[in-house]
Image (cartoon, rainbow, N blue to C red; front, side):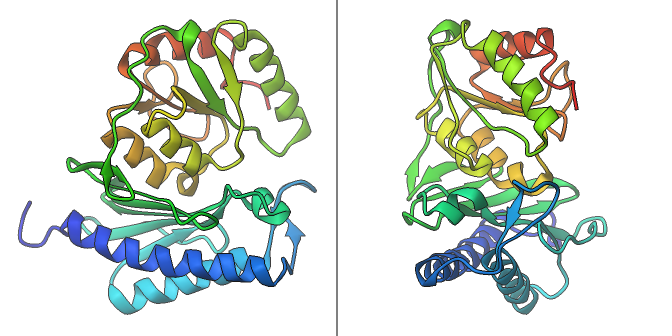
Length: 270
């Protein structure tokens, strides 16, 4: 690390402070009643006034603390960062449908990237106050407790989490994949918040996770938490994690799971 390279520990401290305040806002706005509900890509892809308010709050807080940085957020977008500078990747409320229905699985997800690589991350469940953090090379923690991923080595005994897209044709394809996969694993879980799915995988609450169609803000923070807990995070056929597929699994499960997903064309379809 050079004198000009941002310190991941310092970035994490900023991320935690900002995410906690943002989570408080999301939770208090939920208590007051969900408002300003509109849709984005499809009629089932919802966004609320709280999503927008929380993103504005985080952007303002980061601008005050680190005015030279850039932010990529789900609701208002953003831009890339100059070489060597920090870009923050934000999902203000990951799990908006859960938020809409009052299910306690929604989170503020915030990662700090340098040259496109996440170096610090926090995912805070706004409903429960549970918090997962990581720095690159520094390990992952839940509420301060070090995390270690599942030691499961047999895919047939693995509990696997996943998620679904909003487009009906994509969901139909994903359902076909699940129909074939569910006979090859212990069982499937779907919680509805990708960042939390990755964190639950990091702590071994589920053994593995996969999903097609994620954007950077969906997996930047949770992906670092998962990696630092000992999981392999990537795509299919040696590709990096991205919109076509994100897989997080222990080393012993990653190859067998990605092989099956490739065989079932999980990254294909709409």
